[in-house]
Length: 163
Image 1 (spheres, rainbow, N blue to C red):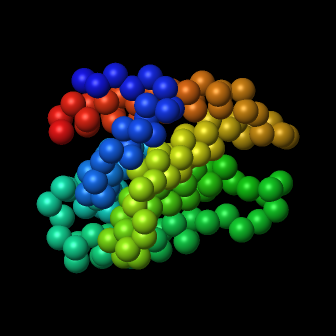
Image 2 (image 1 turned 120 degrees about the vertical axis):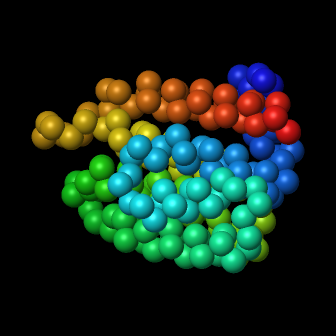
């Protein structure tokens, strides 16, 4: 396995990948946060994104489905009213949608997997917010975020070794 241990190495590794490779590695990032959502559309779209041989029509269909999930889970309210669990599900759906977006929009793909990784980190961060007190607690946030980053480094290192 290629050892990725810094954010610089992570970004360089991602930038070395083709669009299809970025989509597949991005889907692996999303797989690591699927435990944070119950939305079957997200889980199904992740499977499509992870398939290196997925047909363009399948990618487009999965994108539309997961984009609707992201829109439905979006939190449009005052920060004091945010339900962190819903925000978590939203970031998972956004990550998955982002992994499929180029199939729909033809967007520049240079930062595709990095953007997905960022959404996954935000999902994990939101999931670590403790909601039981009057004010949200971020006590577990740093550890959750660092663990997510290390996992992403390992995923990319394994992918680069395979390819």
